[in-house]
Amino acid sequence: MKGLGKIVKVDATTIMFIAAGAYVAVYFMVKIYIDKKAALMENRKKSVYQLFVIPLICSAALLSFAHGANDVANAVGPLAAIVSAAEGGGIASKVGIPIWVMIIGAAGISAGLVLFGPKLIRTVGEKITKLNPLRAFCVALAAAITVIIASFMGLPVSSTHIAVGGVFGVGLYRKFISNRKQRLKLGAIKPSAIAGAAATADEMLMEPGAKKLKKSAKRKLVRRQHIMTIAAAWVITVPAAALLAAALFHALKSVAS
Image (cartoon, rainbow, N blue to C red; front, side):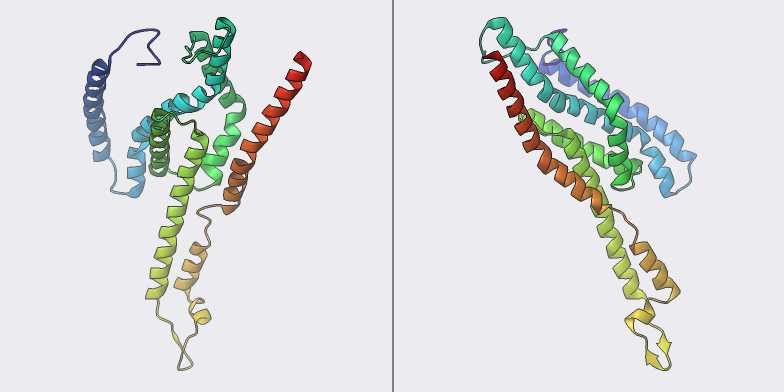
């Protein structure tokens, strides 16, 4: 209603009917596709991951929409206020957003993604925890819902930080489940009798089954060094940006006066 308001006027009722019709059409199209594809697959976990490719694409598209609704709006908002003040000679209570300002926002996020996005994509997608289509779907959907709710409430948030939080949530839950399985398996292993006496805990860990469990328990499901790095970045970047903006404003104000 807001984004397309300058191109076409659509009321809320029409949007709801369009959304409902699109939902029904896409549901049956995807259901037919999934049914045909599932019939040719083996009953394995990897097959389920393959079936999550389409939901993953949809959740990623929804996250992209949410990202534009919040992060791009954060950047475009001050520019729109400046344009309005320059044109009207004062600060208005309600600011309109010209089409060219929205184009600048879209071009800016696209350029940033092309130039500096790949490094961040590798960090979030590979270095924190291992993702598959199912896990990535959960991350993207959770992040999209969170950002959309924040946008609806008018809260400027970071979609990137929220997505990283989703990745950490999946990784830490994997670690929790893995530790729980290890404890259950280790509890089921009976220590062998050595020289007619009960084996100690260290001796029990030398058994082949326990060795394997001990080795698997050391797998880094979540790389904690990245948790500290990203947490430090969250704490440092906000005050750093505030100080830099204040310094730039002071310098420009001194030059102007």
